[in-house]
Length: 394
Image (cartoon, rainbow, N blue to C red; front, side, top):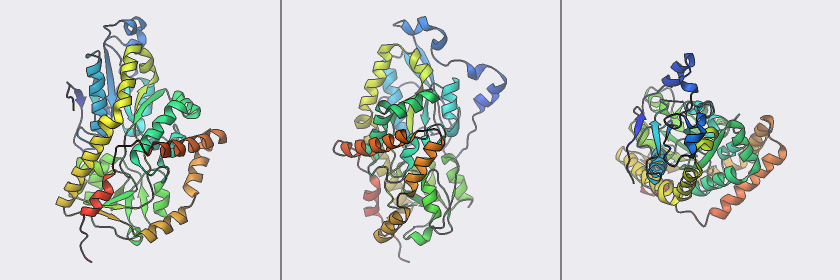
């Protein structure tokens, strides 16, 4: 992977970082200034037209360097920097040091950041249609699911309008490993093991967990390690296998159980519309070319490598991967039925989406996902790790 110079601010995976930069800027005008070019391209239209104009873009992410999803986004930024011969430079703020995950859309819209990691589930009120990605079973394959979401943001008129209303342009989606899991200190081998567990969970999966007696709580991913270590929570949901070592969770929770509820989840790389409009057409084309190569060159191989490494780490820590019994999975799916889909549909309508828009997004996502299954290059590491796992007797 290409390595280029990087300017970033970041902290370790166990540290909860508050976005101090913009908190301080509430009493000044610094965070309201445009972050593009040495003079601010949004305030200097002539600069954007010059072939030698340079663009310093502020990037914000909740991940620390070395996290698998972050590696994919760093590849994207490295490629853009290289292919523009340094005309574009990303000032990289990691580990929520510029904006928390729930604040990223606002940071992009307000000009505190130019590029950022946007998770629809963190702001379902702003991106209700895209939050379809969090419906368990909205996909069955990580890459096909991500690419279908990318198709939506570029082709579905209702999703395009949803982005425009927030002042962002999503460029691509990360391959999110299987999120229908629970990471815990001890192996979970049956649905009854979930009863009474307090666990970090976000999105619609939390409702499914409640039906089995679990107590889901919404906390940031960066807080998971300390929360498990201190006994505040008993497990971690909504975190892919590949991210376990980067979060250090194998030290306190080396077991992962596959709940068998299908694929869901979404994390995207977005550019503020204001920044995008400030970039000359040749740089926009470079970004589009990098987007086209993102899955085969970055997201798929890096995610598979991370999941294999994560499996090695779990096994060395005395853990591994299990799966709920198939009859219990089938019964749980039957119990859930269409209820979570209905919740997403109603939430979207309550947020202002039309019934037509909701139906269009649902239909397009499922159709495009299935069409892409023959084109994917990513192999999910959960099943492979389960085959290598030895569950202790008793």
